[in-house]
Image (cartoon, rainbow, N blue to C red; front, side, top):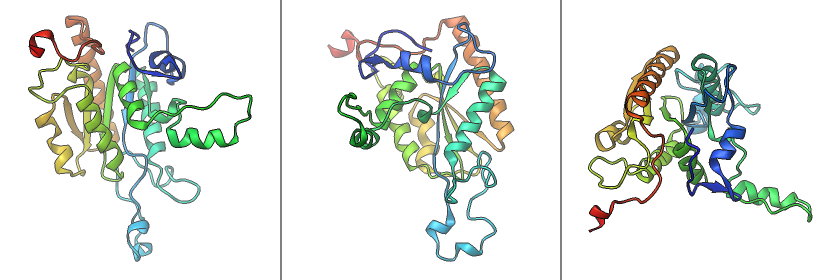
Length: 257
């Protein structure tokens, strides 16, 4: 985890301190093994019963998906819970790859809407709850994490994560040919697509942005490819001292002139 000084804070606390406290740890965690992985993906599964009137005739309203299990990842009101599927994926990463994999909701920072609701019930002697918008949270988490994984699968509603993907890649100046000093090395950002997933915009991202890209067919296939990526990151970090994050001026003085 990058624990250097940045402008990423919540309630005047550095995001790195918050992640160090709250990001779930692997079973064999130690201060010498603090490889932190921010995982992003859809939190809601596509449900045909919401989209189509006659979907109740289907065997299942959910699409076949390598991460989503319709028998396990269901909320009490019958909605598809992709968030839990992502949590399970992170749990597997922590157990098998000995890293601190987490999703945004593992970290106790409310959005502005959530903060507004909490402030309605707080007592007068309690401090005002401050909010932080989801994209700002994701940018901060990504900056401090050793690796960032974007997951796109057939069964998830990907509008939100798609927007955040573009926001994060733009924030770190990763578009090919951008003269800005890179704030996040593209080697540390991985885009993983389910082979059944199709989106012209997402499919073209590696053409425009200097990031890692791969596809997968099964959950085990995804885990193997992520393992290989982490191994290559470890080797590159040892060989070239690959930074996790590069704070400072966006553009060099030569570029400005």
